[in-house]
Length: 268
Length: 334
Image 1 (spheres, rainbow over the protein chains, first blue to last red):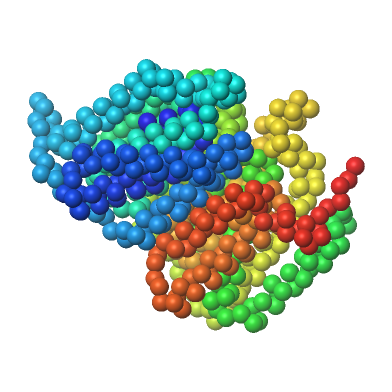
Image 2 (tube, helix red, strand yellow):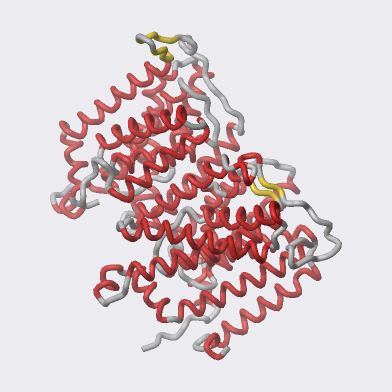
């Protein structure tokens, strides 16, 4: 999930403020597939990611591309508007109640030494690792991935060599959105979905990505791990409901001492 | 007085006077509902104006202004509830607290060169931090909410801010007019020009010897303190405070929609924007009510669509083209 945000920012340099909302959308899609076709969330990961890819591609092409050279806050507001529309459309269409899926392995668990782990979480974590690895390989080894990285490095340079930057941007946004879709499908196996989940996850994703370093994929992974551990420790040591404070505290520290993030590059 | 009016086009003055007169007599004709809507419009115009100092003038995007609304509201309300302190005295505490909060954020951000999107996210982080913190702050009742004793509407007690909606309406009107004049003066001052220079190009401003740190700090502190006043009135008008609501990021966003739609960096923008947005949204609600449709998210979808349309087609907001149409464009000065 945070990976998607990092990909989008790293290349397109637009802060996607509708990220959590897009993930909630993916979760509802997964839910719909489950109720209609009895599709397991981890299977519907593929069609949902594909659907979100199309959504992200079109969003970038139609709305965001004209904004590439606009000032930062203007892009920001655009995505805030998209987020507002998305989250409330979900509220209208799906209602405010929490809805979840029950899979065959919902109540299974594995025992690892002294730890007991939910089976659903293990499967989801495995799927997340696979997606991350695939994404990493795509950016490193394919020609298309190279072209996208070129756009990220130097917008004008990419234009000069004849890359279709706008199409690549749309593609990147699509890939980022697909990551979000995959994340949403995985998450659906673990937690219930409500429209309110979107904004909360947007914030969480931002915290993770900034901690790790905007635009750095390894940073997003590291940030996710770090925030997860911080929140868990904070929850254990103090009151569980205050755990997010620790995540935000960490964010503030990172912003102050290393604004580009732990693994981010300097010129950001 | 002479300084206030200096360089203001006569037509603009006439228009402002007409609008003010209309607003002054408004409560004599309006129903309770309309008065509540008008109060809301003025409230958003006021806090929008305060936000505009930071974003519109000095170019610092804050997405955490609910922090100042909340802190201001909580400080005055808690002092009133616990010690029976008049909100006018509590206001002092609110102002100090919010100015300090703004200063802390400003010092941290500007010393370490946090700017742009990062600055916006820092402000969100602080607002969220406060939201969760206040959820666990028992002196102000934590997440179960702080309630103010509800007084009878029979007599207006301005000293304790207990009274009828009409009293609150006039109070808010006075604040909005005050904020307008303050912003007008600020924009005309030497500092106002420094801010604009910083907004347009921080590097160029610095090269010309403008102390970036100092003037950004002043903008944040003024903006925070002004927002705090809005928070105090908000608390005593609604009589209840929940961290979950008042510090929430959607509040910060609601607050900045007005100035953005009206026109960032313009004086009339926040007022026009608040009027358009709240007016249209309430009109929409009324229409839906008449049609018997009840959908909880419609207002927000509508906000989103408005914002989308303005950001895409009128990047400078509604006011600049409107002002041109009304012939209020300031003559270019050399």
